[in-house]
Amino acid sequence: MLPIPMFFQTAAAPAAGAAPGGDLLMSLMLPVGMIVIFYFLLIRPQNQRMKKHRAMVQGMKKGDTVVTQGGIIGRVFKLSDDEVTIDTGEGGKLRIVRGMIVDVKNKADAPAAANDVKEG
Image 1 (cartoon, rainbow, N blue to C red):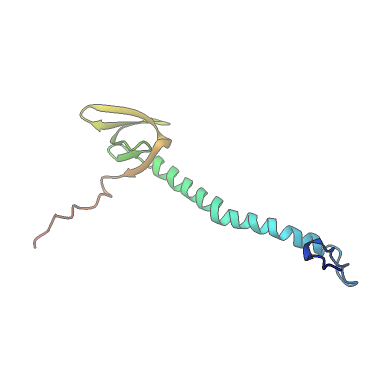
Image 2 (cartoon, rainbow, N blue to C red; image 1 turned 180 degrees about the horizontal axis):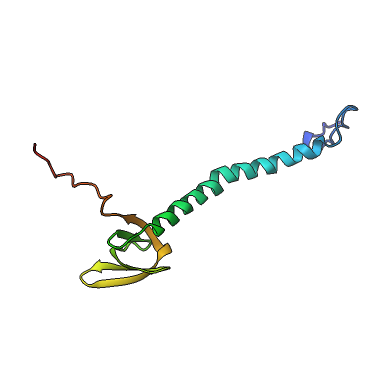
């Protein structure tokens, strides 16, 4: 007689003292665990990045240097509720949507040039 592989065999009957709801609890642990892992690895960090970006864009002021999502670098010329006019140099001005700004560099935040040496 040929042996029957394990995956074709049926599960044995539960023990007499086993709780009837135990299987339901065990079957729900995997999806709940995956949801928790997705929250901490994907959803929460994305929400934190969105908050930082929103604060950065709202804190922008006239004269700041900005980088757009398309890679255009310019100085903030005019601000409105949802648009920013940036001066790209040599008389070029562009109107862009605030959400398309990737980075804001304030004048005060700019580091000193590396070749500036203060002699004392």
